[in-house]
Structures are given as structure tokens and as C-alpha cells.
Image (cartoon, rainbow, N blue to C red; front, side, top):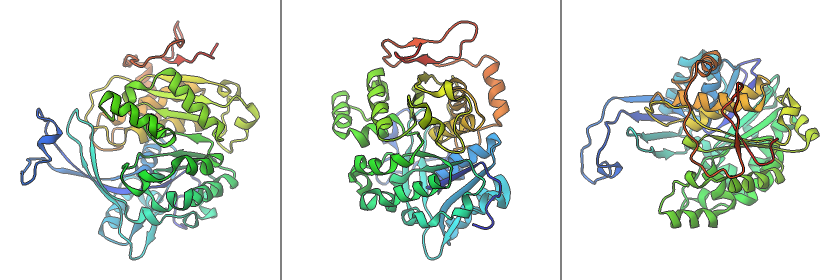
Length: 405
């Protein structure tokens, strides 16, 4: 850890892997045309990039101009060396120096099947991520930082084994150091050990240590209400449940998360935008650590949804992670919730204009300029009864929940 970047504002820890992303042609027959035994599929050159929360969210924060320290666990193998080389290419040894190298372990890698206009498929090896523990986080590596972000515990075996004790201990270490703690998830394969874990019990232990929780709607519905998740999937004949994230369900889920200890709930809604719900306890919000909101009154007891911006989509790899980076950047910059949400979906939109996970992300100032130039938004298609859309000369694009004045 001694070579990790000094003076970082943000420490991004958790899952990291090497992504191999072959260029693919648009497919008229659908994804099933690829998955045919014995068939040779003509594809283009591969992009080699790092993936996972550490890389995607961390490098996006770095590209936005935040001083960022990356903390992932890799093996001492060729893939591990490739991960370090990629990180060095973005920011030199300052970015790469935070990696934890585990002798004799394999590094994680992912084959990303990402045809245009079709949701991606991942073939993933978790590797050294499975042995990441609280002991891998050294207290001196947190000194001077304001925010600790941890990502993808469902893809890290030690984080969900034994009822999630290790995850709770790891987050508590950052919380006790005075940092604001944020957490992101990943949806596990339902048939895997992670998919069969009792995530409600795991989150019951972990979330009291979390200030900002940023799962996707589908992830948290699966983990808190698996029967409802499976019922909706069966009823509608699809696992794409985002169109059914209506106002009441978003409010119910967010209230449950607030009751479990979180102060700021952010639910990623894919192409439908970003949802925010915050605690009504001003004292609790003020005490979330070194990245507590500067405009405290503007953050207390809020419920907002901001739609996405229109873009030509080249690939969706890393979209949620980059959206999170935009949110955390805005929070660290002391902005109001509306501005933070708009910045988050704008960063996510920039990301999907490129096939890989982070190269589409520009500097924060460039994102702001693009929004100010009249960037068009997508229409909101979710059912938001009793919600109202902001308007007037100061239209911020946000939709306001029933409790908003």
C-alpha cells in the first residue's frame, strides 16, 4: 500500500478484473445466433481493459478530475500484470500502486459479449476477488481521504460467506476512520452460491455502516424481495424489470433501506434514469463523515428522479459504475441533489458512447458544459403517479416525489 496515491479524496475498493471485449457486428438474429455449438462467429479486434467496480468507478472518478486511490486484489499472474499495466496507462504508478498482489492466486477476468443494441453477456472468473477481506484494507491507506466506495460484494466470496460478517467489518473499518462510506452491488447468478445467499441478513449487518447506497433497482428487488422479483419476471416473461419500477415500489424499497441505516439511497434505473431518496434526519445526514453534503438543508428528506440524456449507444459496459462516479463526484463537490443527479446521469450517458467501460468519460467541466448547451433528455416512461416535473426558467429536468413541495 505504501506506493498508493497520497492525498486521494476517494478510495475505491472491491472487485477488479481484466475485461476482454471483442468488437461485434450488429446482429439481426439476436444473441442466440452466437451461442450455437461448433459455430465460428466473425468478430473484430478486442479491446483489453480493466473492469469491475474498482476500475470502472475508480477510473471514471480519475477522468472526472477527482484524486482517486484504487484498491483491488489481483494475482501474481499474467492477467494481474495486464491489470497493473492498464491502470498505469491511465494514471501512472499513482493509480496502479494501490493494488494488493496475492502470491499464487489467479487474477479475475471477464469475456464481455457486447453486440450493438443488445444487452451484454459476461463470462466471468472471480479469481483473487474471492479472498478479499477486511484485513486487506490498511488504515494508513485511508488517511486523508473523504469517501470510501466499495463495489460488487456479490462477486467476492468472503463478502457474502458467514452471513456477511467480513463485509460489515470491512465497511466498519472505513466508517471508523471518519470516511463517508458508499456501497454498490452486482446481481449474482441465482443458481450460484452468491445468488443463494441470504442477502437480507447480509445487508442487515452491512447497511448500518453505509452512508450512501447505490444498487440497481433489479439488484435490490432481488435481494430484499426475491419472491416479488421472481413473480414479476414470471408475470411479464422477462428479467428486465426496470419498466415496472413505479413510484410506489421505488418508495417502498428506499424506505426499507433507510430503515436499515442508510442515509442516502440511490437506485440505478438503467435507461429510465436515477432515483434518489434521503433520510429525514438532518443530524444523521450531517454525521455521515468527511463527504457529508455541504448544502445540508437541500439534502434532507428528498425524493427525486432524473431521466437520462439522449445518446447514440455504442455499448453499455460500465454504465452504472460511471453513473455512480458522477454521483460521488457531485457529492464531493458540495452540489445540491438535483445537480448531483444530473451530473451522474450525464456521466453515464457519456460512458455509453464508447464500447469500453470508461474511455467515454470526459473531465467534469466538459460534462457540465454539454448539459448547459441544451443536451436533450429521454422521456420518462415509468409510472410516477402524484409526482411532478420541475419546470420554469430554472428547469433542472428532475421529477419530484409526492412529498416534495
